[in-house]
Amino acid sequence: MEEFSRIQRLPPYVFAVVGDLKMKLRRQNIDIVDFSMGNPDIPTPPHIVDKLVEAAQKPVNHRYSLSRGIPHLRDAVCERYKRLYDVDLDPNTEAIVTMGSKEGLAHLSLAMLSPGDVVLAPDPTYPIHKYAPIIAGADVRSVPIGPGRDFFEDLTAATKQAWPRPKLLFLCYPHNPTTEVTDLAFFEKVVEFAKENNIWVIHDLAYADLVFDGYKAPSFLQAKGAKDVGVEFYTMSKSYSMPGWRVGFCLGNPKLIHALSRIKSYLDYGIFQPIQIAATVGMRSGDEEVTKICDIYRQRRDWLIDGLNRIGWEVPAPKATMFVWARIPEEFRKMGSVEFSKLLLTEAQVAVSPGLGFGAYGDEYVRFALIENDHRTRQAVRNIRRDAMDKFKSAQKKSEITEDELHEGEDKMQKLTDKYVKEVDAMVAKKSKELAEV
Ligand SMILES: Cc1ncc(COP(=O)(O)O)c(C=O)c1O
Image 1 (spheres, helix red, strand yellow):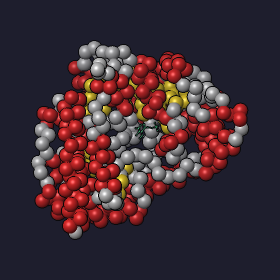
Image 2 (cartoon, protein in one colour):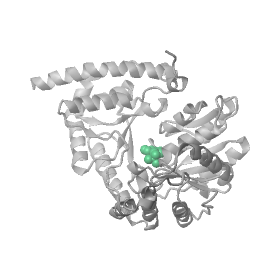
Image 3 (tube, rainbow, N blue to C red):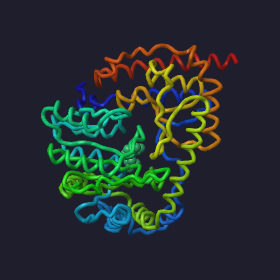
Image 4 (cartoon, rainbow, N blue to C red):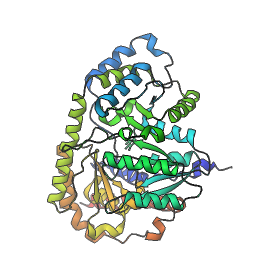
């Protein structure tokens, strides 16, 4: 049978390795404290849910809606940008509603890119920043990010080395998974760079409102000239805890907004209208609920960071996002993030995401998503201290992945992932035998 080339360019998620192991352990009735997926657990504010129920009862709202979003919702997001960032946006030409930002990021890539185009994406990064261009047939070059790196030096090197010259740069601050934050001066330099090098910019502001300790995340669109070179995605998934509702926005450059609305007009009829109405109410009802949601994440961050630091795993407190990006303790670092995540699961019953899943440069880290409550977070810390660290030392085996392998690209990643999936079965069998003996 013929293979599908686009599908072949999509390796199985590295996260599937840990996900699979987690499910298998759960099927053995083993309780897993789950920090692995950034899937918000906080209920959507009740007045938004109430509005959805009310709007859903009106038959007029059962029809196809507007692909680019109802005018009130586009107005509401533009009002928000004016209020919070003093950015002026035309709701007709500079704003479009998307079915979550992931859908928008993927379809904008499809609208803009042709096979052979080159795209720059951070490494590590949220996978869609890399795979949206890949789905569109483009080639992706990494710009490494992380402590001690000079972003503009790496960006310049990646741009110079690429042929054809890069067409598009993805950015995301506050960043998933590294939790890095930035300031307006950075975005101003990005605009300058994009103009000099004729590169479009897509900025993902998914964690706009999950900010702590007085830090305020700037919008890319606040930078002078940003609208000339790019767009920003914003989402209600995190700020309003509405991940399942699928309400996102793309804002900024009219040419890109037009391209996205054109492609979407062929593909969808818009989000279910009652959802758009409820989202409009949510966005216009002030920032109190957003602040409450942010406070919950801050509190969880503090529990986890305090706990990890107390047991000797030193991790700095992030200034933003719903994640903790923890460098693997030195004595275990050589194993790589997949092996270390597997150990955390089997020895401490704690699920995290291996940094490798976000790119080769993430392999010295694991990511905790702050989706567990106080009690569960404390339990996780206790498990890591009591059960894991000692056992880790004896269970530790050197990673079979070499540095070179890590950088050899997708083919290798796919083979490694396949190999890990096989190992999972053996490991679960061993663990359940051990537990049966206890
Ligand atoms: C950086 C980033 N962008 C986008 C998304 C997806 O957001 P949405 O629910 O709007 O598709 C996520 C979800 O975790 C994310 O971390």
